[in-house]
Length: 402
Image 1 (tube, rainbow, N blue to C red):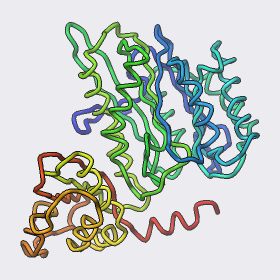
Image 2 (image 1 turned 180 degrees about the vertical axis):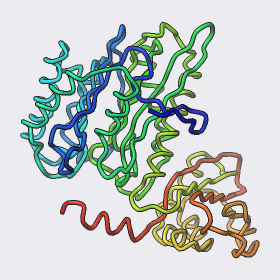
Image 3 (image 1 turned 60 degrees about the vertical axis):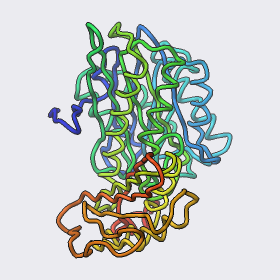
């Protein structure tokens, strides 16, 4: 696997930290021929620390319901994931399928079922082909390994409408030693997380307690995945898990670890937006000089969810009026006559009115778009990552289950 640099991080898979094995195999669950669709990530220790955050959608999928019970004691030995079916809204039989898959993986690994997280992604409202899933779990257990290729295969196995696998890793110097943090994620649509994203697994060989892992993950997710809002649609299956093996022997400063974890999660979030269904522009909506971080977040999210704004960006139209109209719907503190808006560095709105000529903004020559909204009401800021609304997005989602 080629190692490249992305935002100061190396594109290394979840087997980069010490103490982890992984595999991604073809089990025949996906309708796409020869697609990898079962993944297994195993923590070989010496620690089996785990934490996870999940969708806030009240129609949570069966794997989410099971996995919530798993992380309650802070111990996770493995994560079993499948694409090709969400196992959501499948009632008691679907929950029993999730439990059966955890038990099967645990038996193969010599672990306890209550230490195995289960994640699924794909079409909602259909049972999983359990014979394929169980056989795929056996195959994945047989193929577990620590190489970068194993990490890549695992990232590929959780893809659905994704066009590329998403993975990243980093090494952090700490005192006289170092520890590693790496992750993989999937998601190209239905990206409006509420405590997580579609599916993500993050591994580290740092020495953490269950309480530290939980605190760090929640803060990192708050500042990364929860700032990704592609299409305003929240999944039933969102899960982000953190596994800590302690194999490096390094006990990190907790704040230092939160920063490293946030950096990895933020990069995965950027990769999700870059591969969003049908997108032709990657948009950062940044609200600055807000009275509170909550105000800044509310304003940025309101703009990011405006279909009119997203259509304008698709059409290479710097329509700042659509931005202001969304800002005005929020409860954020600001005076309309003090608000400024810039698009890719051009201040198209000054003091709530006409600014520089909008023709100075050239959206056709770049995929990256930065919208900056200055509320002139304080010193807080927050950014939301989103994308434009395109014909390709509509086409893809009009035929998703066909």
